[in-house]
Figure 1: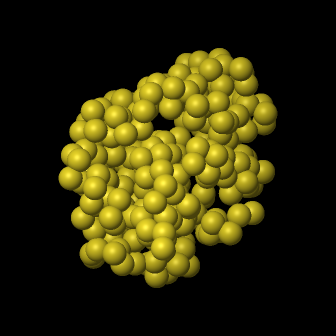
Figure 2: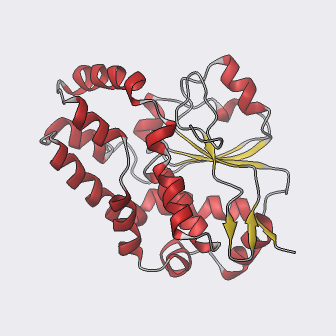
Length: 258
C-alpha cells in the first residue's frame, strides 16, 4: 500500500497526487483524487473535512450523481464543480454492462475505446476546464479533490493530463495512474459489484472479468495520450484553457527548485 493512499471506510481509491517532481520543481501538496463519496462514514467525513478542501471536481454524469449523491455540496465553503451536459442519458459503462459480452477481452477492448473517447467528452471537457481555472485562482492553502465513480478512468485522465502539462515525467504519471490496482482491495469490493450488476442489469461476470473492469492497465492510458497527441495542445485547443490561466496554474501548483 502506497503512502499516498488514505484508507477510508466508505470511500475507495482516495489518495494524493501532489508532491511529484516536475520540470521546474515539485508539485504542491493538497491535491487529491478519489472514487465517489456517497458512502462516506462519519469518520471518513471528519478525516476529509480536516484537509481544508475548497474545490471538489465531480466528473460523474447526472444519472450517476442522482444514484450516488455526494455530501460535499452540503459543506459550507466548498465549491462543487459538476456538468449536466448529457442530461438523463445513461452512462456508457451502464449500457456496456447491460448489453455487451462481459468477457475479459471485450472488457479490455471497451476500456481502450473508452479512453480514446473520454478526453473529448463534452461533460469531461467542461469540468476539466472549470477545475483548471478553479485551481489556478485558488488560495495556496485550499485543498482540491477530483473524483468520478471509481476514481480511476475520468479522474485518472484529468490527473495525468494535468501532470503532463506541468512537466511530471511519464513514468511518474503512469505509476500514479496504476496505483488504483493496489489502492483498491478488489477482494473486498467485488462481491458488492457482482450483486449490483446482477440486481441492476441481471448480468453476471467472472471474477477475472470483474478485476479487468475495476482495474487499470497502462495501455489504456497510452491510448488516451495517443489520442490527444500533446497535453499542452489538448489543454489549450480542445479544453480551451487560456495561456493566462495555465501560467497561473503553474504558479499555484509548482514549487520551484532552488
